[in-house]
Length: 454
Image (cartoon, rainbow, N blue to C red; front, side):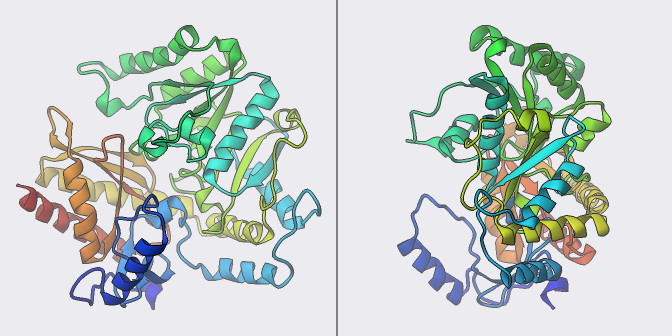
């Protein structure tokens, strides 16, 4: 049974012959700009496992880049989607009200840690759409034109979110990008100025934010500050709580809204239903929360949640869309959340994350190339460096690791400004045996790649 199987490669090469044939067809029919460095053509998936068209089995530490917290093809979610499909596929919410949308909006208002006692929610189709709509809501409420984002940020590939995203490789030849987007430094404490104490570093990064008011746009023109509670593409870097407190204070002082981009960090990934729940425990809440990825177990959906006061200030007609809150997606999301709460997947995320960190610490004792291990719950990053003193990034090792682990039956993915971080996003339904098998492969492949690179 694939759900409980362990990784196993049965072909002489990866990809095998059937997979290679499909990859060749992909090359001929799909733009090169949609890149893929993995030699895998999926035939079916269950839990944390993928079986390819040649019968090879891979344990997946990528999870659809955070989409599959509940795993591949959860039978209860499949049943919920089938039940909805028997009724109707589509009902545009601007034309007909369907109860699934309403029920999911009610549930999102219940579980998201945004400010306000009375909340409202609406839906879009992707993480980028959620982020862009969150910005639209902030502008509609504040009547201000500008926003602040951060170094290392990734918010999407629409025109607006390409401007918001830090790494401009994602926007090559796409300019000019929208204006009114200003950038401050994110507190990447592992790479803070040399010799600077952490307490001083928080003040240093906070000043980078307030400098925007002097150097780029006055505070009373800023509608929102957009923060990932744990940066994804930036390298799995948690936002320090003291810094978040300072950001919240700045927002309150100047009437700026705080947006939490929880596209990747939501839905039990960090050991809480949302990573900003850690903020709430420290007395800080975002004004708007944008989330997507694991919300519907792989069916395209995203959500934006804020207080009634903020939401109802948005001009009519500026939000919404044809497929937003599709009935099939809403049915999937309601079931996903039910299962996550019932099966304590947030608690499971903490268990998984601790096991991964323990394994990574042992790896750091064996090889002097591990610079930093960080994350929250089951959202863990390991940063590789050529020298732990100079912290020179080691992207060559990470690139080699991705190919080497795939050949052994483990799928991993990189992240980070320098491409030198491996991010852990395995489905939270992964078995202990599968997790152990994947970590063993990872350990073996680090040794193999270091030998090859030397």
